[in-house]
Image (cartoon, rainbow, N blue to C red; front, side):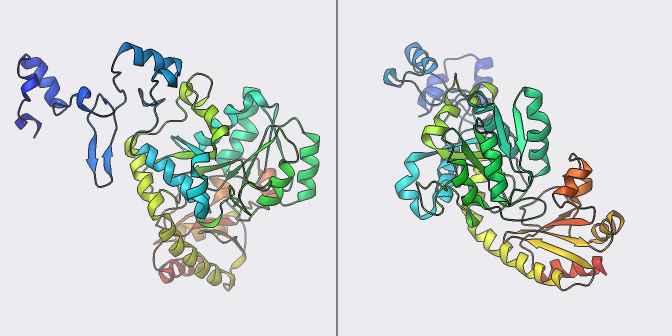
Length: 424
């Protein structure tokens, strides 16, 4: 207990009231800490975790250099958690995410990439749009997006004076070519590699090639669903290719976290593009606080990133098994699956029949989430994609009888048994 801690000799001359305050911090002294953290670090099985909000300067000159951003004069990367970098385990998480993105090329290319961590996947997308707002008059997006992303880009960004355009059919490369040519002043193109909630793989490399024919355009690919386990847009087909993405975006809360215990997001890109996010005065990340993550949250996602490939191997195999069952069931009208752990299917009938199936599930919960080790189901038209106008939902295949399933790590027969009894 903290009350039993002996008083260090250097503090024994202080008064009882002061000793009580220091005891609450386990007599941690910022002067003795390598990072000069105001709050003491916490030891975990991954090493030390720093949750402190503030970090002391060694002198006024260091503080002044830091606020000027003058590295030559000794400016520090960390002094306040909203604008700090290079602290464990936050830096380890950045490094792990970049390594996942670059795969076999990580040892060579890692130094040329960086990541910004955010409080959620949606804040990552919002930050990305804000960061390049001044460089563009238009954002072009695929309409096959998660409901929150669709709402942000289609409905909210225009309120901030950011013009947005959505393609009609994101699978039609001729349509992409036409839209990119018509809106050649655009600076950012945003797509989901594995569209949600009706899974379909977009021709990501072909879209990237078309985007990069316009020198002022950058491509951001949301790879939340497939994760780097299935798709690595920064290095596919090979690194430094016109078909590479400029940014990848993740909701870390999904498959990378994997256990539904925290919220977080990330943007990964080439260092020369990411540096502007981290500029404490000019970037949108530090002043707004959108690009910030606590040490505790980073530690959770670091564990998830390190176990991602093992979990995804099981989940993807389970999904294939479930897809095979659904395609053979007489009450299933259609099944949609693009290779990840996410799938969707349409039942015979309409919204009432779909609701009956979802509500009849006993083992699988109805939850507006995906990427967990538990299997979950949702009726998108009435929940996650309800902000979309009905005509837009139907245009993009989100019908009233569509059910989305995020496959977990349970035994596949147990997943199938629950779906079977619900359908029957």
